[in-house]
Image (cartoon, rainbow, N blue to C red; front, side):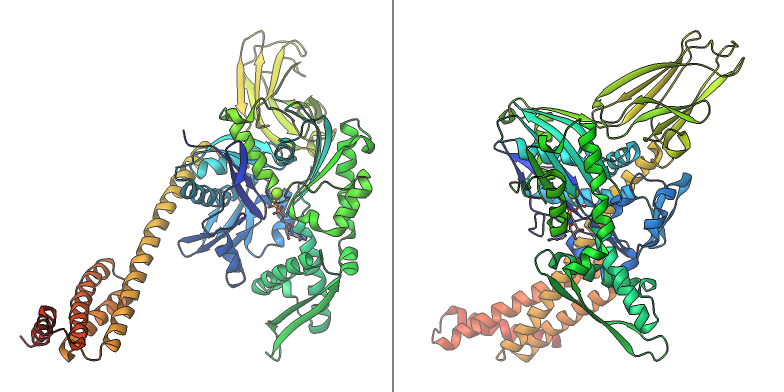
Length: 628
Ligand code: ADP
Ligand code: MG
C-alpha cells in the first residue's frame, strides 16, 4: 500500500512529510527545498506553483495568487476588506462566496489550493517512487466548519483521498510529543503568515488530549508586512504625492521588500529598504526611487496593536482549559512569525516560560500530520497513540427571537454527538427552518450561519406539541452533520453542512475534471517545450560542429547548416510535427557529419587505415549529394 503523507497547507508556505522507519521526515520538493511557497501563478493557460511562481510575482502581480488560504471557505462579506489590499482581483462569487478573477476566468480559492496540493504530492510521489493518494491535511485549529470543508474539497479537486483534516497546533504537538515520555501540559503558539492559533494540550502515555484552543484567523506575518507597506506608502505619498498602493506592480514590490525588512529585523536592529525605479513621477515622468531605513523599535511601534492581539486568545485558551499560566510545562513556538523578537517577548510575558526550541517551527506541523497519517494507516512503529481533539467554536441552532441555542459548545472533544428536542412556535405550523450557526455570540445574526434546511410536512398540531429532534454530529475532521426529525410523524431531514460558500458536489466534480485536464495540458505543454528546447540545443550543437570542423567539406557543412536552418524555422513556426521532422532530419545530418569529421580527424594522425579511406569516401559522397 502506498504510504499516506501529511501536508501542512500553509498560508505562506506548505510542507509535506511521511513516516520513514518510525519517524516523520520532510520530503523535499522538485527544486530540492523543504518548504514550498503556497503561490500559484497563471501565465496564459499555464500554471506555475511554488518558488517559481513566487519569483515572478512582481512582473505578474495580477495573476500571481498568494495567501489564498485567507479566502478559503469564507464568505465575501467576511473578507472584502482584506480582498481590497490584494494585488490580484478578489471578488464576490455565487451565493456570497469568494472568487479570484485571473486571466479572464473566475477561480475558487479551493482550486488554487488544489494546485499547491497537486504539486506537493506529485513531487513527493516522484521522490518516493510511488503514487501518493492518501493524505492528512492540517488546518488552523480556529478554522470554522466551512473553512475545513473547503480545505477537504481542495484535496478532492487535486485528486487526493483526504483521510483526515487535523488541527495544525495539535499536529505540532504530536511531532513534539512523539519522543517525550512523562506527563506534561503544553501550550502551542502558532503564528504563521496569515493565522494565529493557540492550543493547550495534555500529553502523557501516548495520549494527546487537547484541552482548549483559540486563535485569530485574521492575524499573521502578512499583517506585519502590511504595516510596513502602509508606512512606506504614506511616507512616499507625503514626499511625491503618489500612492504606490494604487500601482499593482509597485505594491507587489513593496510587499516583498516589507517582508524582507521584517525578517531582517528579527536579527538586526535596523534595516534599509531600497526600491529603485519604484514608479514614475505622474507629471514629469521621471523615475522615482524609494529608500528608507527602518529600525526594530519603529517596526514594533508600527505593529504594536498586532502584538497586543495575540494576548486575548492565549488568555482565553488558558481560561477555557481552566488553567493558570503557571501550570504550563512547555511552550512550543510554531510558524515563521514566532521568530519576531517582540512576539517571543510577549509569549514569555504571557506564560512566564522560556519557549522550548526543540521543534523546527517551519516543519513541526507537517511532521505531526505525517504521524497522524501513520496512525490512520496503522503504522506499527508508532505504538498506541491516541489523539483527542476539540471543536474550536460553539455550534447551535437559531431559536425564537433570533437567539442561538448552543448544541455543542466550544472545546468539546470531537467526534461529538448531541441531540436536543425543539418544538414549534405557532399553531399548525407545517414546517420549520433550521438555521445552523457557529460562533460565541448570543444573537444568531452575530454568528456565522453554516447553512439552513427545512423540515416540512409536520402534521397540524398546536404550538409546542411537535417534538423536533435535532442532532448535531461532529466528525473527527471537525466537520458537522445535522439531522432533524419530527417524532410524531417520523418526518426526517438532514444535511451535511454545506453552506452557500462551500462548493456543491457538481462544482467539485467539475473542478476535479478541470484540474486533471489542466495537469494533462501542463504535461503536454512541458513535453512540447522540452521538444522545442531539445531541437534548439541540437541546432546550436550543429552550428558549433560546423565551426569546429573547418576541414569538413563545404558541401557537408552546407547540408548540416540547411538542416539547422530548417530546425530554426520549425521552432519559429511552433509546429509540433515540423519540429519532430526537423529533429529527426537534423539528428541524422549531424550523425553523418560527425562520423565524417571524426574519421577525417583520425586520418591525419597517421593511420592510413580503412577508417581514413572510408571517411574520405563519406565526405565526397556527402559533398556531391546536393548537386545530384
Ligand atoms: P504559514 O503557516 O502561514 O504558511 P509560516 O509558518 O511559513 O506560515 O510563516 C510564514 C510567515 O513567517 C511569513 O509572514 C514570513 O514573513 C514570516 N517569517 C519567516 N521567517 C521570519 C523571520 N525570521 N522573522 C520574522 N518573520 C518571519
Ligand atoms: Mg503554518
